Length: 235
Image (tube, rainbow, N blue to C red; front, top):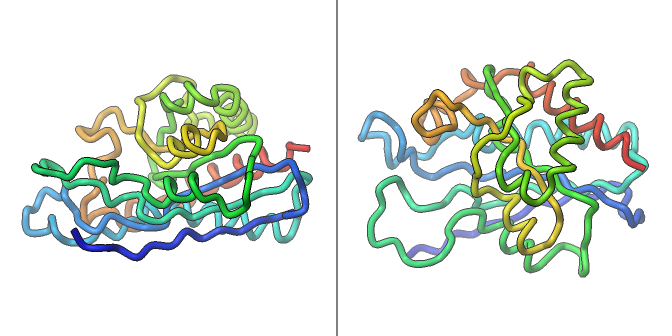
């Protein structure tokens, strides 16, 4: 196959602090809209307003807040590349190997700091939908149930319980899996799960309709304020 150049983007706040939190998102977007209802669009790259840009946008605002008001704990923000290059829908004769979350897999084997450890990690993926429902994702509950409960409790305290649903959701292969399994950092995934859609992620997932029409500033605010609340409470 073709080689794809990729780059992870890493920012550290309070780099001298031993105790740390990792927050992360993927910044690439899927290079083909393989779920688009129009077959003519299925080789078209998606815009990724929700699937990619929403998590990045929230973390950029988190970064701005940390710049103005430093946290008591060290914070590392990572934008991972090549998350969404997995095999196309209905692909046949796909070579063996895991083609999802490649940037995260690389970092987990080659962290930006030798021996890097964090207290826990939080992944933001598809966090901008106007009707977002963040269920307690399966791998998150398996590896870091206490972190899930911490985040969901803070969301409820801030009045965002309509987004952060107090119920278990599906198990999703996402960037938090390599962070858990390869880097041994207990990590959770805040991700929109739509139980009424065929894909489980919303009707526009991996289509050309993943645009700003399907992103809400209120949802982004809810996620961002929840993340900051969690960060600022850590000592």
